Amino acid sequence: MIEGHKEISVPEGVPVWDVDPYDRAVLSDPWNYYADLRSKGPFAYIPKYSILACGRYDETKEVFSDWERFVSSRGVGLQDFSLEEPWRPPSIVLEKDPPYHTKTRAVIERALSPRALRNMRESFRKYADKLIGELLVKGEFEAVEDLAETYPTKVFPEAVGLGKPTGVGWSTTAKWSSTHWAPTTICAGTPWRKAQTPFPGSWSSASGTG
Image 1: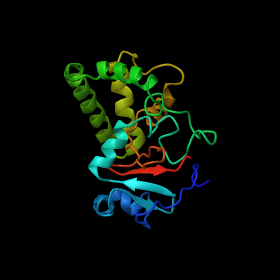
Image 2: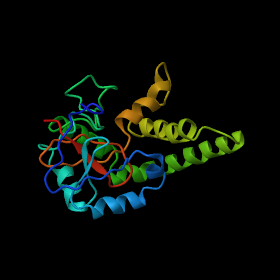
Image 3: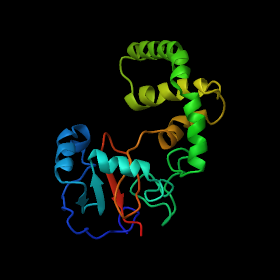
């Protein structure tokens, strides 16, 4: 086991790439990483995490489209939830496969359709202006907690009819939303099943889960 998933052998013909995609330098400026990843071919093996990474369009599209081979229900990180206890509650949106995911996605698509979003635009803008004004008055603030988490966890629940953020337990909404709604990228790796990995842009990886 490595990072919560089974180690895999280097597939024949796949280059070994000694890189850490979670390195601070890569995360802060990933464009050279993306270019290098695409130059490696369809896949590259990253020994630090024993994963396959892909950055080209065709392979990434295949992984996004083929949920039967590349499952999400076993975790959207390096950890394979089928092998050990998840370190957090599984996402009800990102870490589900059809048919459950299909039902959930249908509800979200209705709530966030282009028409619905057009109707929400003005209220989103007003709250953004209000929040930015409050933060400017403070002068110094925590960017993640006071801005990146506060804004979506305020406007989104109201937009989809969950009501205003009040009551016991709402203080944990930001942490919940980070788990359940944060964007992730699909991981790819044929013939191994995947584990999705949160990472900016087109990066994707796969761990061998047997």
